[in-house]
Length: 157
Image 1 (cartoon, rainbow, N blue to C red):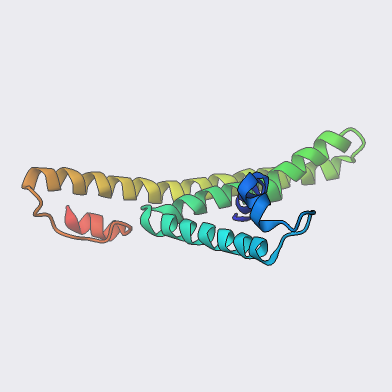
Image 2 (cartoon, helix red, strand yellow):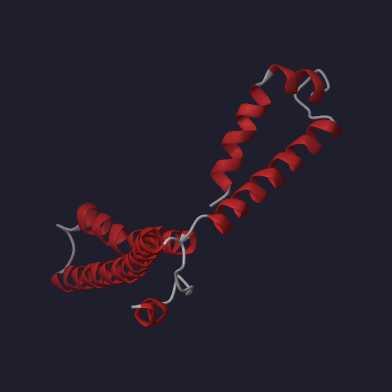
């Protein structure tokens, strides 16, 4: 997930005048300072993303939702659709049936991976709203519970 991000930042960095002035040897080669600058930039990006991941609530659930959705689409749904689109008229009936079976399994898997993290996000959102509302009503004296657990939400009510 980091690969396209650091490439975009590297291109912008390499295009900047001050970086070209201090980090190139007059040609197309980076100096030691230029290579060090690239490594430092990558480390800063990784640390920044780690901070975002640790401080954004339910970031893991969100990335799970995005990753599983894209994985199901790329693995099952899109290749089958492309295969049917490109060579569907010349395929025997059993291969078309197999493609339709794989496609339906892919959609079933996609529906499953979409609902599971969505339920977790709904539970986290409900917990957050409940905590904020009760905190507002009671003036800050609420029970504490783990926001990612449904049992914590149920025991709180």
